[in-house]
Amino acid sequence: LMQFFHYIIIILPLIYTSHTENKYKMICQSSGPGIKTVIDSCSNPWASIDCPEKHFEIRKHFAERIYLFLLGYPFTGTSAVYFVLANNSEVSSPTACILGGEKEGWRIPIEWNGKSYPRGFVSTKTEKERWQRDLEVPWNTLKNAYHSHWNLSSKILIECSPPEILHTQELIDNFSPTGNVRFILLTRSPCNIGNTTIHKLAANQEQPYWPTGPITVREQHHILQQHGDRTFVLRYEDICSNATYVSIALEKWLPGLSLKAINYDPPIVSYPKKSMSIAKFCQQVALPSWPSENTLYFNATEDHVQDIRNALTVIGYEGTIERQLE
Image (cartoon, rainbow, N blue to C red; front, side, top):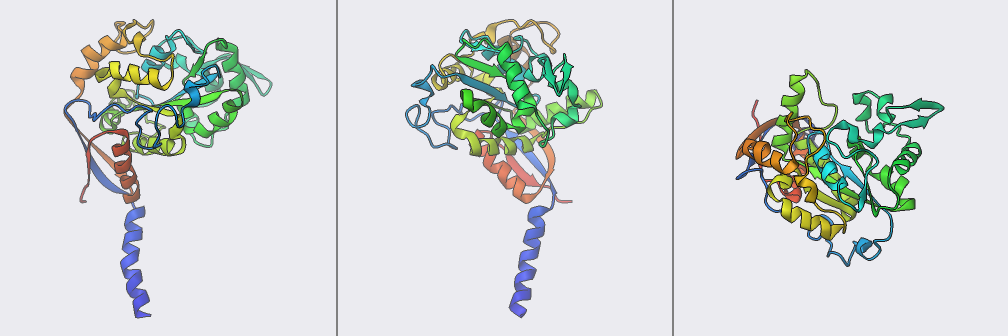
């Protein structure tokens, strides 16, 4: 009996600690954006694959329809990457190649439950509801809407509605019967995205309804564990600092993709107000503003922090996480 109580005394604090939220400080250390090396589909460590023979039969059967979904939280470059990739000649997008929310397939007009929604599925939900994991999404209706706007003679059919990052398995289940589903997972340094989100939303007195900061890396790691064999990781920072290599890696992963449109001037931009290409934005705005060291404070359980450390290593961001004493 004494041994049992001794065991309880030792174990209870460990259980309590692993499930109790504490305050942590994360320091993103880098000589720029915090990048070790570009990760491409042929060398990603989560899938343990040899490209292209082992899993990427896509190169041998390229005649098959390819559904390419961009998965990314706000402020991870979803608009920029969508604009650049949708401007490839072998890619078709269901919406105009522009920057901003109008790119989303969820904004295509639909008929649903006997009603017309000229502003699409997005108009039926609040921003908070859109980011709920248990959201009821009319996938068959959306699939029909996407197909009615895609050029179905194109080899690659691309789409980007940010909340779809919460519904990866549903995308596979609904689109796999008529094609090959692939994902590009957009990531960003936790310190940069955390502080960017805080500053931009604070200016409008808004609260984010999606995961932010280090939690985003943990969520993205889970996607890689589930769907790593069909996913290309594209880091926000690589778009600016390693565009040439990323373009080569994309073409190797999926023939027909490249970043050549990075030098095109988009028709609509939200910031800066003067229109400029993504490449010019990188040179004049993004790269000069990236700090060599950035600090972010967040709350998490010990288990979550360990998951975040593992995810940082996999995706390729450098940083240290320290628990803050009360």
